Amino acid sequence: MKNLGEHAIVIGASMGGLLAARALSDFYTTVTVLERDTFPSADTPRKGVPQGRHTHGLLARGSAVLEQFFPGYNNEVVAQSGGLLGDVANDVTWIGRNVTLANGRSDLIGLLASRPVLEGHLRRRLLALPNVRAIENCAVRGLISDPASKSVTGVRARIEDKPEETVSADLVVDATGRGSSSAAWLEALGYQPPADEKVEIGIGYMTRTYRRRPTDLGGKLGIVIAGSAPTWRNGAMLAQERDSWIISAGGFLGDDAPDNDQGFLAYLATLPTMAIHDFVASAEPLTAYRRYRYVSNLRRRYEKLARFPENYLVFGDAICSFNPVYGQGMTVAAQEALTLQQCLRAGSNDLARRFFRAVSRIVDIPWDIAVGNDLRHPQVKCARPPMLRFINWYIGKLHLAATRDSTLATAFLKVVNLMIPPPALLNPAIVWRVWRGNRRSVLAASSPAIGRAA
Image 1 (spheres, rainbow, N blue to C red):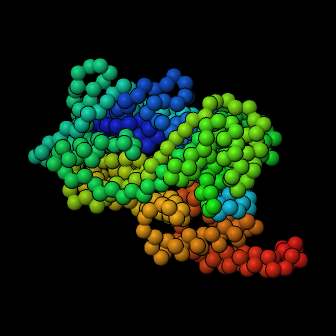
Image 2 (image 1 turned 180 degrees about the vertical axis):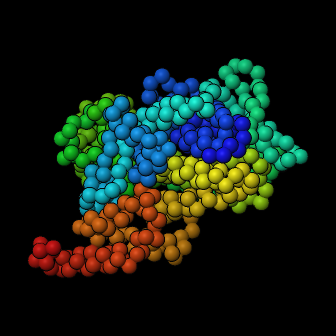
Image 3 (image 1 turned 135 degrees about the horizontal axis):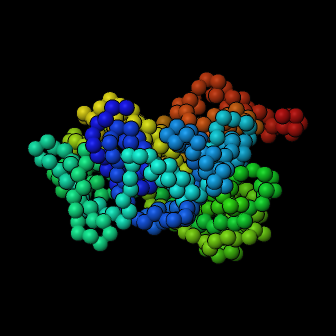
């Protein structure tokens, strides 16, 4: 790899920030990660990751990219912390549109572990690189720029209780997440902030951790339930390290699950399967109830800006954050890190424009998946073009056919896991299987004898 500079800074040690730093480490003599938190001594939740106490898992694509950046990462999480690798299509029960997709063996391997474990292992692997360091308790206050070259030259930062200081860099990357200050920092330098796209969903969910036994769920590693009419409530139950299950349930637009045993059980009983309810009814809790709220899908259109300073990038959730029930955030950050690596291979000239344009194409897919599905809810406010209405109708038909066709189910899960693009589901062979599956369903409904034979 060619050296593009002496020093690169990443603001934020989230999963996205750590992955960005890994991409930069191949091109800069030193990479410094500036984090406002203190890193925990064990893999426990930290203040700067409010969602860290809730349900997490790495989609198959994210698991593969992390393995590419850090060979052996997945097995390390399993061997050292008790994480679990599993076949996403065969070891997990997926329920959408109120029907259960058929299980079937696939090459979709996902990683189940808590967010603190996933992040802790990634941070240790990153900081073991000889040219990467982290500074904790470091609050970044703004950018330093050179008006003559129209470039960012560093950041203003305060480390612990010391006076504010300037940290110089050849490249600065903002990976501070949804609450990013980049728009304000850009305005302070005389640049226009990016336009926002926002879809208000008011998602809230309640989470609790329980003791896990090998016989639970018939040996499956989890259940994932996508919200659908009439309740639009979603749920997830995923195996975690230390013989535990993490369970989350919630709904749209303020339809929160209660934080007491009776109320939580009653809420779980409204899901399209009683499996989670029946488990919780007799399970041993390991934690208290924890609530999380997420107001809106948010996308910042950096790729549409006419002017942007040199030597500065925005990354991960600071560009786009999605409804967390779809579990896309870490995987999208991993894909962005690969894209950053590819852009850096072509040099640092015009880096921001090239990176933002490439990332916009990456973000388009999970954004369309998340927002498109959220817009099935009639009270979520946003335009619904004819193509979106058609796609949602078609996916409903695909789900119905996939209840007995594991090939269809796996194709859908490859899209969900960001392994293939959504248009792949319109491949003629897939469309034929959808048509055949729905025709069989119609025949089965009209003829019990045919239904039994099928």
